[in-house]
Amino acid sequence: MKIINRCFSRRTIEEIISTLESKALDKKDDWISSTIQSLKKASPTSLKISLRSIREGRLQGVGSCLVREYRMACHVLKGEFSKDVHEVEYAIFQPPILLHYKTDTFTAGIQSHIHRQG
Image (cartoon, rainbow, N blue to C red; front, side, top):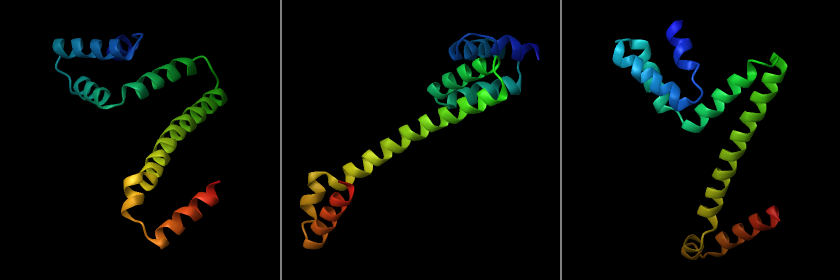
């Protein structure tokens, strides 16, 4: 428990990883090694968001924590969903694809789709 407290009480994710790495040099421990690997595989942004959420959550009740977690998940999903929709729209409507598939059926389908969206 001492090692967890010592490493994870650091202010930033970078400091946490650095402390874990220095501990790994001092002491051969599978838990430390696997923790370092897991942290390095994870998204730096999500690690920073999670650390902040955990730290803020220490001072809040369960209800407030659940609301915050829900809002965070919605923001992340909204960003991913929006990016995916943009990529699909670009793939469907970019000029080379439209020029390549100039058939009456395809053009009518695209026009129908545009009218439904507008």
